[in-house]
Amino acid sequence: MRPLSRLLLASLTTLALIAGACANQQKTDGSSSGGAQATSTIEDVPNEAPVAPPAPAFKPYEATEGFVIGMPAEPQVERKQVPLGANTVNTAAFSSRTEDGTIYSISTADYPERLVASRPPEALLNEGKDGLVKQVQGTIKEEADVTLDGYPGKSYTVSSPVVGEVKARNFLVGPRLYTLLVIYNPNHPNTTADEFLTSLKLVNPPPAVTTATPDAGTGMDAGTVEGMDAGTGMDAGTAAPRRRKK
Image (cartoon, rainbow, N blue to C red):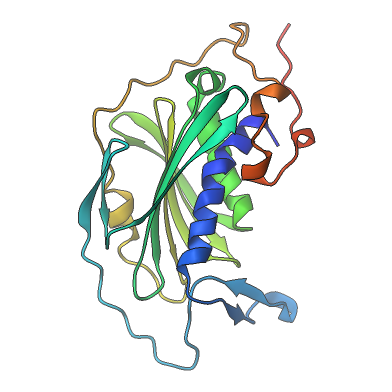
């Protein structure tokens, strides 16, 4: 896995932990092929006619990190600092769970500009998407390029045997990666996911980071990711150093 993928997983790991903590219990779903059983954090009540829960009323939530987003209730907030060599990555995660078990979550991860400038925005967004898919052991159902106030982003839907259906958006705003998630039971289609995913408003955002040329000395070596092992569950040998172009 590329070094930057490991860094992006730091914030995604936080969201995965929140998803597990918000669910009251795990139930077994025996619908997998070959009789295999997969656990899910999304609650489902079998043998009952589905009853559509009332749609949540989203209210603006203003975060000190510099954004406003619609939330169905006051979110749980977790902030932490992740060591990154001689630097620190500040992360924050905000999540809210509705009565039907749907989880609405947004996270931010502020990376060093030098690191962000070392790769094109499209590569960072794709690595963020791929990291999330791997984290929930899912498969991509659909994806598209999107923008937010001119900043690049990626919209995609993931089907996961672990957490259910996931609708997600990643945005790269300056050196900050935003990750928005809606996690819900695929047997109860969510009609409010897009309302949440499109409610993000930026407050005094920074300028976009200019991608450096390969010879500008911005490549990362193995030492750059030192200290990330605890947050990602991977050792330093997982990522091979990038080679400079001759």
